[in-house]
Every structure is written in structure tokens, then in C-alpha cells.
Image (cartoon, rainbow, N blue to C red; front, side, top):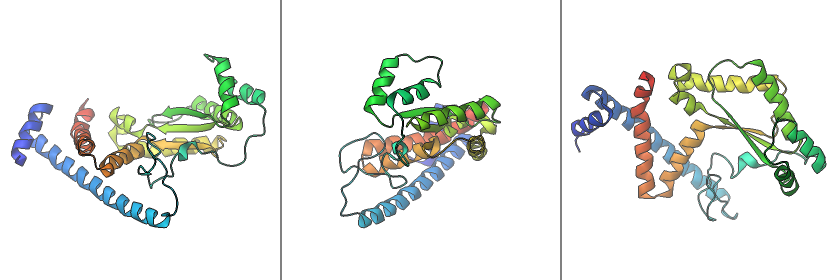
Length: 245
């Protein structure tokens, strides 16, 4: 399909002018070229990683689990966000329950929480935030207190830094670099508030999504690769529309 025909299709679907549709196509091609460079760099990294550990059994992927031998992301070790750092917590199950239960007004099933503590030495707790501006006192101090209570009870704490969601919601003027600076600022506030980050991980939405895109491409599945390409194109095309909204 010629570029003019492709622009006409995009213009019809998205309700754009031919000029805007052509610009969106150019931007999409540039985005795909950048992703292709990432794929090439990761393939090289994977080759080096395999050469260095050819005597070791392959791990499963940290994203989605799967069969032995599936590609392991070179950007992080498998299951890095759930690995416990340091010595085990010297506390009884009752003490752990009291610490964990103390962060909430309500627990749907206390017995289920007790069973989780008894069966799993390091449960995983999740919280997410959208970098969107200044942090208020409760968000800074109370969250630090609660996180420290949970990690002192042996809980691994995962923060989902929703920078792509902030982009979609046009926070910080829709500037992803400003959004990510804001995310770093919030992390620094928690450090200054006394949050112990030994067993706290920050998972950035942008990093996770980009790595999932590369993972789909490296698996070699035609359908998955086509979907990945379409997803990138759609993201680039819809970004100006989101800005307008």
C-alpha cells in the first residue's frame, strides 16, 4: 500500500486531515524504528547472556510464567520483583499478623490472611500511583509508615509507577519526561520520609510495557508481532488525540 493510501485509511478511521494522518504515519515509522533498535540490542544482550551462562538451566520468563526454556528478560532477573533481600524476619506468625493487620481498617477474611502468613514467608503486597504533581503529607508519611510495617513483617512491597497512565490522562501537560521526573520526585520524598526500600520495588509501567513489546517480537510469533506493531502505531496515532481531549 502506498503511503498516500495508508494516510487516507488512517484519516478515515481516526477522523484526521490527510496532513495529520501523514504526520502520524511518519511518527509511527520512527517509533517502530526505535523499537527495532531495542530488539537488536536485546538480541545481542541475550547472546552474550547465553554465552556466559550456557552451563546453567534457563529460567522461565518473569512475565506471564511459562514453560522452561522460554526467553528470560535480560533487563532484570526472572521474578526480581518478588525476591526477598536480606535476612528473614525474626517474628512469629502472630506478630506478623498484628503488623500487617494494623495497616488497614478492614480485612475481608482475617483467617485467609493468617493462612497466607503461615504458608508463605514473604507475601507480596501491591500499590500503585500515578505521577501527577506534588505529594501531600498523608501520601508521603502515612504510606511510608504502612510500607515499613509491612516489610518488617516479611512482606515484599511492589509499587506500580503508572507513568503511561499519567500520559493517557494528560498529567503534567502530557509530557512523559516530566511525568517520569515527577515519579522520581515521589520516590525521593518517600526516602526522605523514612521508607525502608530494602524490600520495596518500583515497577514503571513504561518499562514493563516496552519490555513486553520486545518479548512479543522476540518470540517470533507472526500474530503477536503484528499485534505489537499495531499497538505501537495506535499509541503514536492516538497520542495527539488524547492531548486534544
